[in-house]
Each structure stands twice: as C-alpha cells, then as structure tokens.
Length: 301
Image (cartoon, rainbow, N blue to C red; front, side, top):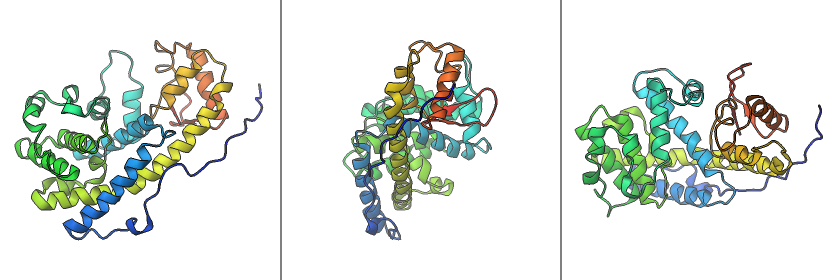
C-alpha cells in the first residue's frame, strides 16, 4: 500500500554556532587553550539548552563514539557497528562480549546523575570504593582543571583503568558545568598519548580536546535536532498501537531493534507490527536502517 507523501517543516537555524574567531583557535599555551575551550563550552551549553534538541539521543550517540575509542585503547578492533550489534541485539538476561561491555559501561554511567558522582554500577568495585574520597577533589578550581585532576588521580593509582578514568573525568566535567548527566567530551577528544601526561601538560591536552571536539558536537546537535523535528512532525500521523512510546524511544536511543526494543513492555508491539512500524518511518524518511542486512536489523533517527 502506497502512502501519501507527508510535507515536512522548513529547517530553521536551531542551535548556536561557534563565533568565527573561536573556530580555529590557537592552543599553543595553556592560556590560549583555556580561552578556546571556554568559548567552546559556553556555546555548547547554549546549544544543550535548546528545547528541540534530543539530548538523550545525542548523549547515547556520543557514548557509542566514546566506547569505540575506549575499545581501541584495549587493543580490540570492534567499530561502532559491531558495538551496536553487541548491545542492541541482546535479549534480556544475555551478557555482551568484552567490547560490548565497554559500551554498556558508558551507557550506565550516562544514565546516572552527576551529582555526587553516584556511578557505582558503571565502575569497578575497587575504584567505586575510592569515589567518596575523590568526589570533592579540586572542586574549587575550573571545570576542566577538576576533570584533569580526576583523570590524573585515577590513573596514578590505577594505571590500566583508562576507561574508568575517562568516564570519571567526563562526569566531573559535566558536574562542574551544571549538567545533570554525563556528556562524553574528553573521552572523544583526548589522544591515547595524552593519558600518559600529568600536571599542566595534561590540563593543556584537556583544553585542546574540548576545543577540538565541541565544533563537531555542535554540528551533530544541529543535525539531530533537524531529524528529531521531522520525526515529531509525522508522529501524530502514525496509527500503530504504541507509536507514541516508540517515537519517544527513537528520540532517546542511537539504535533500536524492532524485535527487541519495540516488543518490550511499555510499547508491546507484535514482532510483525514493530517491523512494519520501522519500515514506515524509513519510508517517511524520518528514520534509517543502520545495518544493511535483511534480518537482525537496527534502526535509528
């Protein structure tokens, strides 16, 4: 059955952009880098406050990117597509492999509030036990100084815990900026060699990482906002049972399996209805099939 075309809204300018003078900053000294990262974080903060931005979706996508980078730190070769498969095709009670576990760790951390750094279910027990001692370390300094200090503190005592150290550094940064949940920035922007630095050298690397990463995030935030607005525009026209809850899930997750996510309690579509619903979103050009496979498909905005 062929459906009538759905007119889409015009795409407005929806998120702020970095001013021209901040797009290619000089970051040769700590002072220059701090100025550049400050401009980047101020602009990002304004973008995150935009009502139409699907912040949970952006966060989930950044967790995937952070996990991909962190998996490479362990010497494994899994890329984003493999990590999506490992996590989003899990049935209840199943456990992911080592690479998928990194993605799960990031998603668990991102689901927790940064207040008090209550990230125990996302941290190894021996590091979680030290968290109350570390939670207030350096809280009178600037946000990136706090994050850098947390990164240095964790790696000084647990040199092989790079992934956990990056999670905690991003959690501290997000808390200091007043963000209620983690937004991975340092994990995406820092280079593996940066994790061997300390003191001013590490702080300089953190400033550079943020200054270099935020422009990409602003572009992605604008793109996701446009895509989310298109999905919201067609949502009232979707007649499937559970469609409202399904749309909300699409606006919060980087990828979904119709057979798993849309048949779960709370949406409870049949397997056939879930597949048809996702195919309808693709037909309306408000969702994409992400795998290119004929079966075990994943969909996302």
